[in-house]
Amino acid sequence: MKKAIILGIVACFLCAANQVFAQEIFSDIFSKMAIKAAPQYEKANIQWTTTTKHNFGEIAKNEAAVYEFQFTNTSDIPIKITNAHSSSGCVAPSWENKAILPNETATIRVVFCAEQTGEFNKIVKVYFQDTKQTEALYIEGTVLMDN
Image (cartoon, rainbow, N blue to C red):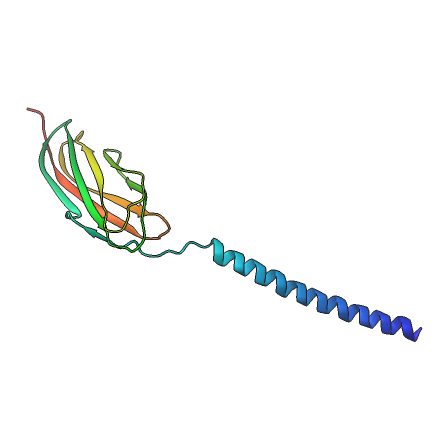
């Protein structure tokens, strides 16, 4: 009977020790996986070669106004635009879907469709790959009435 009790105690001790050991191993494995899977979130270093705010001035109604914002990648690594959008349906940004190498210049083309008369102020947000960074581009102007 003593042997059974001692074996039971030893078995419980080994199970508890094994559970703690297994928990430490799995915790270590999962933390390493999380570090590998997490994006780097480095800042995309860019220098705008045009202003980030453009005034179209006066635009005729139902005309499209176009402006090209340009920037240079001043990072040591390639960067990529993943998205650019405006909350307004009358603004359409476009860009070349490719990596921008260090010291290379890229363009974001913004088209504004002047469908309503009056003054306008619009924002285009630009997102870069593997960063939480956004850049804001501003357009403004006045849409004139038809003659």
